Image (cartoon, rainbow, N blue to C red; front, side, top):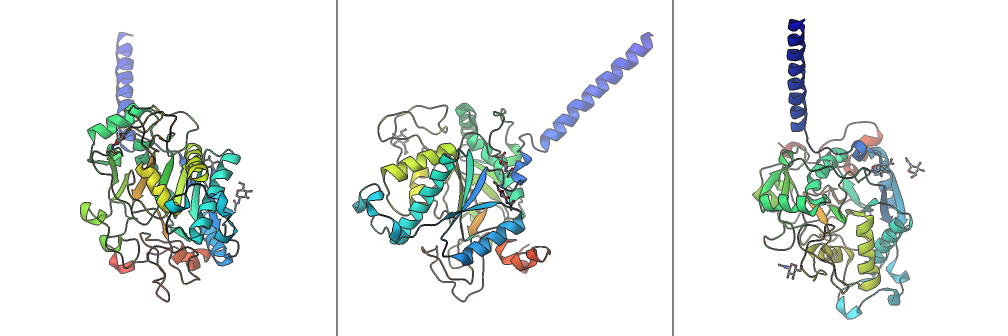
Length: 395
Ligand SMILES: *[C@@H]1O[C@H](CO)[C@@H](O)[C@H](O)[C@H]1NC(C)=O
Ligand SMILES: *[C@@H]1O[C@H](CO)[C@@H](O)[C@H](O)[C@H]1NC(C)=O
Ligand SMILES: *[C@@H]1O[C@H](CO)[C@@H](O)[C@H](O)[C@H]1NC(C)=O
């Protein structure tokens, strides 16, 4: 009897040790988990919108097909021709926006219409694409890593974010070393509960300067085989190479707060972010092209605010005020970007893409995207595997 008790106790202890050990092991595989909903047809957002001028049927055909072969459900929003926008509907001083073109005007209106739709239909999150956006066929896997990294920026507790930023100030934190973050509320977005804008497709961004109000935390995703090698890290074929390639080992992706980002091929907004953007650029003032305004907004140009940390702020300054001063929005970006502008053979842009029309007659390409969906459409509709656009150049 006595012996049996001892055996049972030993077995119990052994089981306990095994259990703890297994939990620890599984912890190493990713203590911070992200929801498998990132693999759903809207990539873990509530809806995906794409802006497209109805007259550009060529682009709608191509994007519809790209979405279909990627298993994505995209909702088209009609683009707006600048000529159809009444000048009196554009807020702010026209003198404050030199170089604001008719194309910019139409683009501004289209983005306002998407933000309006998000609020009107009560969406918590939405991804917004321009109709020439391209992505890697492995996008959901990339987004899963991005979401893990982004949680360091989108956590609802200012204290948690500040602690992370303080201990890793200007230091690279590999995503696997992200300390376990306290759980957030159920039903939160897989990208975290407290963010305004996720800048997933751009044509260049800098890292925040130390000692600015922007978070200087950088969360790295090392050895990401979907990141092109250094010689392909640039926003168009004639651009200078990105500094990312000099600063990091090959195939590193870095998640950070944007600074000076340009181009809005793809960005996600939360309901909160959509409201702030519609207020700022729908009601208050239009100062330039859409991407430049989003850049300034994320950079904190419109944030003059008082000191103090709101729990709802972003851990990098900001406070309440009734005047024209806003809290810094929580923007998160990634280098190299996960969406990029596709340079196709077709009819060119209605605004002007980065790099201008330089690719007329050249071969098709998409910067930053190795297994491009657009470049593989023929194979993908045929049920074949996607191939790398830079084939032999990649290690
Ligand atoms: C995908 O996941 C998100 C996040 O949970 C959810 O809001 C959305 O409704 C899902 N989309 C679909 C099509 O189920
Ligand atoms: C996309 O989602 C809508 C509802 O949100 C649904 O009616 C439609 O069938 C979906 N399309 C595809 C291709 O899954
Ligand atoms: C940081 O934000 C505060 C207001 O919260 C502002 O007064 C200060 O100038 C900002 N600092 C920098 C470096 O932008």
